[in-house]
Length: 141
Image (cartoon, rainbow, N blue to C red; front, side):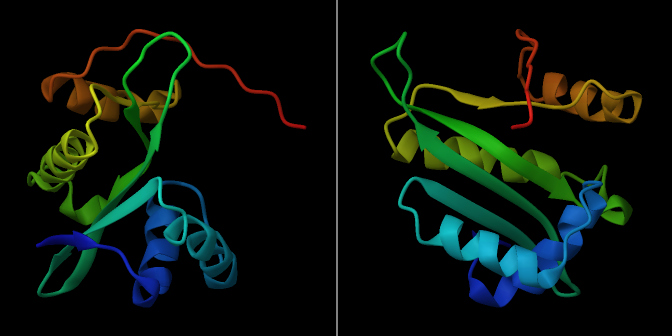
C-alpha cells in the first residue's frame, strides 16, 4: 500500500535514509520531517506492507524560469535493499507521477549520484522512462 507519510513514520524514515547511504539519527529526521511535512509544496509517500514500511519517495512541487508550467522534483527515494527488484520503486515512481499530474505539473525530475554503486539505480530510472540529460554540481557553504 502506498500512503502519505505522517509523524508516526519518523523512525522508519530515518532507517530508510540509512539504506540510501545517508545514516540519520531519529532526532534529526524529526526536525527535517516537521519542516517538510508542514510545507505545502512537499509531499512524502510511504510504501507499506504487512511487515512494515519498505520504501519512500519525497518530492517537491517547484517552478522554473525557463518554462511556464510547474514541475515536481523527486528529492529522495529509497527502497529497503532486501525488497529491491520487486516493483516497489516502480510503484513509488508511478505514485509520484500521479501526484505531479494532480498538481498540474508537466514534468517529474530527479538526480542520482554519479557513484559506481548508483549504476543500478540509473538503469532502473531508464527502464521506467526517465532520460539522463544533465550533470549536477554543488558547492557546500
